[in-house]
Image 1 (tube, rainbow, N blue to C red):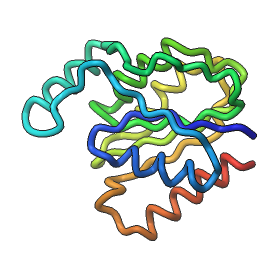
Image 2 (image 1 turned 90 degrees about the vertical axis):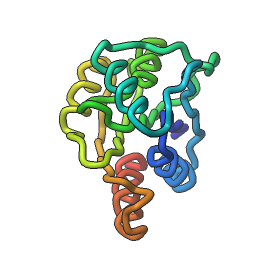
Image 3 (image 1 turned 45 degrees about the horizontal axis):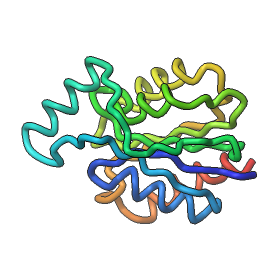
Length: 160
């Protein structure tokens, strides 16, 4: 199995999980980086983040080489914004084909609806085989043991 974790992280929660998963399963990592990043705090963060999700914006990414041909397993990580995945993830799934790939999804939130997020992402990835979904609530703030258990659950699904 050759795997890659593709993720977007604004506050570090999604990146924390990407680091943990990549170490446990030996996966490469690709952090999606929009050309223009939104504010990391305050009103602007929520306003611009929410607006970009509602209008289904696809920001240009600094990541120019998103060739996933050598990977058979792709793990996608996203924060939940306005009950869905982030614009950077929308850009990613619009730029690459995951047809025939084994795909695992994880989402991080402060209490957002991961079910809606996963449903919307699965609609876009209908040509892929989605094997698992795992949601994390504030993993940076959460008890380390609980986060480890959730990561282990995701990693077990990836290794199957």
